[in-house]
Structures are given as C-alpha cells and as structure tokens.
Image 1 (cartoon, helix red, strand yellow):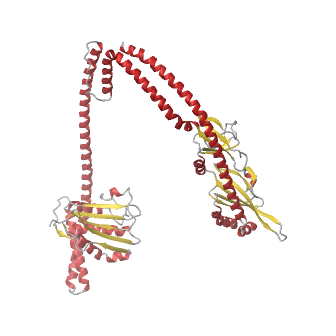
Image 2 (cartoon, rainbow, N blue to C red):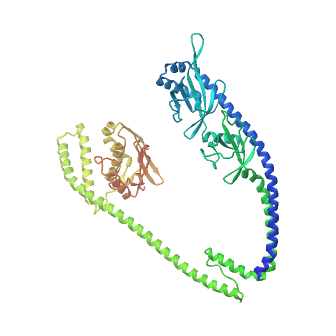
Image 3 (cartoon, helix red, strand yellow):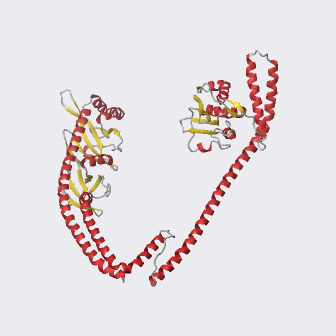
Amino acid sequence: MSFKLRTKILFPAAGVIVVVVFASLAVINNVVRRQVLSNVSRDLTRARQVFDELQQRQLELLVERGLLVAETPYLKAAVETGDAGTVQGVAEEVFGAVRSDLLVITDRNGHLLAQVGNAPPVGQNFAPTSLHWRETFTMAEVGLLPLNSTLYRVIFVPIANRGPRNEIYLLGMAAFGIRLDRAYLDHLRSLTNSEIVFVYGDKILETTLAALKPDSRWVWKNVDSTVTTIAINSEEYIVVLSEARGSSLGGYALLRSLREELAPLLQPIESAVIGVAALSIIFAIGLSYVMAHSVAAPVQKLVRATDAVSDGDYDHPISVNTKDEIGHLARKFDEMRQSLKRQMSQLAQRNTELETALHQLERTQAELVQSEKLAATGKITAQLSHELNNPIHNIGSCLEAARKKIMANDPAAELLDMAYEEVLRISKLLRQMLEFYRPQPAEHEPVSMAQIVGEILKSSDEILLQHRIRCKLELPELFPCVHGSRDQLKQVFLNLVLNAIDAMPDGGELTVAGGEKNGWVCLSLADTGAGISAKNLPRIFDAFFTTKSSASGVGLGLSVSYGIVRGHGGRIEVESALGQGAKFTVKLPAESA
C-alpha cells in the first residue's frame, strides 16, 4: 500500500521532469551542433591550407636537393659507365645528403642501376610511369608510389650531360622518395589537429584514424573539397577532401570526430540541466517519502538488512518490531542470518586450519629436500675425502723429507714450508670431511680475513700473472679481526679467488675491499669476468651446481664455502649480472673487545 502511494506521487512528477530535461537537451544539442559544425568547418579549411603548404614546401625542398645531387659530377660519371656496382657505391655516398628514405638510380631506358634506403625493391624497370598522380614540377616528375604496404612520395630528376657542341643528352634518372608512414602522418596530425586519410581512387592507402584500415575502400563518394559529415562505424565525423586530389600531393581527407568536438561544450550544459533535474527528483522523492513513511519504513529496514547480509555483514541487526506479516518475515530472516553467520564462522575456522596445515607441509617438504641435498653432499664428500687422503699423506711425507734435506737459509725452504703447511691444511680438511656425519667443532681464534686473502694472493702470484689478472687492494691499514677457524676461512677465500681466476680467462682485474660496518666485518672480491646470469644466480650455492666444464669443477666449492660462513654466524652475498663481472662479499660478526 505504501509503495503504491509513493508510486502515485513520485512517477508523475518524475515523468514531467524527465520530459522537460530531454526536450531541453535536444534543443541545446541542436544549437550547439550547428555552431560546432560552423567552427570546425573553418578550422578544417585552414588546416587543409596548412597541410597543402607544408606538403608543397617539403616537395620543393626535395626537388631542390634532388637536382643538386643529379648535377654531381662523379654521379654523372658513374651513371655514364653503366656499371651497377659503381653507381651503387656513389649512390650510397650521396644518400645521406638528400635526407630522403629512398634513392633509385636508373639508366636512360629505366633499367635499375642502384637502390639505397630501407624501402622494398622497386624492380628492374623503374620509370616515372610507375607513379600515381604523376605531374611535372620544376624539371622533375613527381608522384606517389605504393611499395608493399607503404606509400612513398617520389620525384624523378634527370641525370644529363653536355656534349662537345653543348648539346644536352640524357644519362639516366634519379628518383628520391619520402616514406608516408604512420609516424609521418602522426606528425601531420599533430600539426593540423585532425585525423588524416590518404585516398587513391576508392582505396585507402594510409590513415591515422583507428576506425579505418589501409587497403580498405573509401566508400564516401559524396565527399569533395567542401566540408560535410559522414558516419564511420556508427560515429559521425566532419570531413573535407583535399583540393589537390589527383595531383602530386595526392588525395587526402581531414576528419574530426563530431562527438569529441561537441563534448567540451555540451558536458557543462548537460551537467547543469541534469543537476536541476536531480534536485527536482530528490524533492519529489522527499515528498513521497514523507507521505508514505509510516507504511514503507519497515520494508525499507528489511531491504537494508538484506543488502548488508548480501555484502557479507552478518552482524547487521534486523530491527523490525512490528507484529504484522512484515515483522514475521523479518524475524524469520534474522534466524536465517544467525544460522548463516554460524556456518560462515565454522568455514573460516576450517580454512585457517587448512592454511596452517599447508604452510607446515611446505616447511616440512623444504626441510626434507634440504636434508636430502645435505645427505647426498656428505656422502659424496666423504667418498672423495677417503680417496684423496692417502695421496695427500704421501705428498706430506715427501715434503717433510725434502725439508730436512734443505738448509734453513736456502731460498726454496720458505716455499717448501708453505707447501707443507698447505698439505697439512688439506689433510686436516679431509679429516673434517670424513667426519661429515659426525662434525667436530673447529678451533676458533682471532683471525684477520685481510691477512688470509693476502697470503692466498701471494701464493697465487704465478697463476695471476699467467692469466694476466691485476690485483687491486682497497683495505684499511688496521683491518678488524673476527673469531673463527683460520683454515676454514682460508678455504672459503681460496675458493672465491680460484672462481674469480676461472671467470677471467682473458685477463682482468680482481678488486679486494672491506672494512667494518654496523658490527660486521666485510670483505669482498670483485672480478671483471663474464658474470652470472639471473637464471643461475639463485642456484650458485647449491651443491654440485656448476657452469664450468666437467674438468674444471663439480660444484662443491661455493656450497662448502656457504656452509662454512653460515657456521661462523655470517653471510656470503653475491652481486652479478651477465657480462658485468661478479662481486662476492663475506660478512662475519666483528670480534668482541
């Protein structure tokens, strides 16, 4: 009953308002349309004049340059020989001076001698008769030439010479072309503020208008040099065709969208009219609401409650306390809301449990994968260590015997001592790898990473010299110490130095830099080698991953180094890009004072 009452009041008032609004908009649209058509007609006429003048000046400039090139003595001499290779070379030399997109040289019979530029081949026979809209312009033949799907404005100028009696005889022709592609038309569109369509007969050659496609038909036969309107894909355009249709400037049409021209003028007026109409309708709604409130209020509350529940607000109360049929419906709907709320709460709880279980499963799977990797690495490492232990022991025994036979002041004694220490270090590391499944805590002491790297570089002088690698040290005089295993850290930096050498087979520069920052002692090694691709960068610390040949490594060096640094409570970071070298940075906690 209340809805019927509101309808009886609201609909007649709203109908009158809507009729008045539409009538006003129709009158305003008609007046503004006539004014816009008049203004745009004048603008298009001026734009056509600007367009024609621009094309005319460009054509004059191209003809002037073409005539100058045609008078070049060495071009005449090359054409007179009739040798295509000679003419091609000369054409390539003069092409840059012409500032065109196409240069074609032919003999007097139209046979192709040379073509320069990015245009498709013009064919073996090329003459002014190949042009569309051909005409004579200042000693030149001018016209348009479609090549594949691209349109060119082309001029033909004669290449002539004078005989012994000062008579002029023709040697050949030079053709210069400018590409009328989409970029060129976009430039013209910005100058004329209009869409442009090049037309040849009933065929569209090129256009900036998205609604039209090249090679489609121009079906508007009634369009001429006067301004008129046409419909393209149900949209109305104001159009004018060039007065030069059929000449060397070619036939073209300038278009502007009537909708886009009307919008800036009509929108403010329409907004004002619609605003007044809206205020009138609001007033009518308010009047009907006041009159029908006593009946419609319970239904409105129920509608708001249903909207809230449909939007997911299950806590929205339904406050309809009447004892009639609407009240009974509201109570039943409230019971349904509460039941739906309980079910959604249970569903949310189940979703949370499932997400938690999924995250736990993902973590467990990652741990299993990492455990399998470590187990495989440990097993292979233990096997390799066992096989290498005996040869290393024999080498150590030989070095120890050699040390006893060499005098202390012998220059070779220092090198033997260093070699013996290295063998002992390798032997110690092998024992630690043999105890991979039963790791023993390494002996930690205050050590200087800079000193370790210096020793490695000193012992690697010959290798660095052979590979033409320069070392650049950027370290402070007092380099802070860290608490760690000297042998293990030496293994880390030895791996990094050897990797840097492998990355620079043709020589380069190895930069060592470092210092202390925010409680961390950092030392970086940067090479100028081939770098690491973004695809391989996340995998370089995986065991057995390598980009080297099988004879250069098995992919354990960085994996072992990563584990050693992590065991010291530090981090090892890498920065690299393909072709830009790599930088490895070892960060360890500074030793407490």
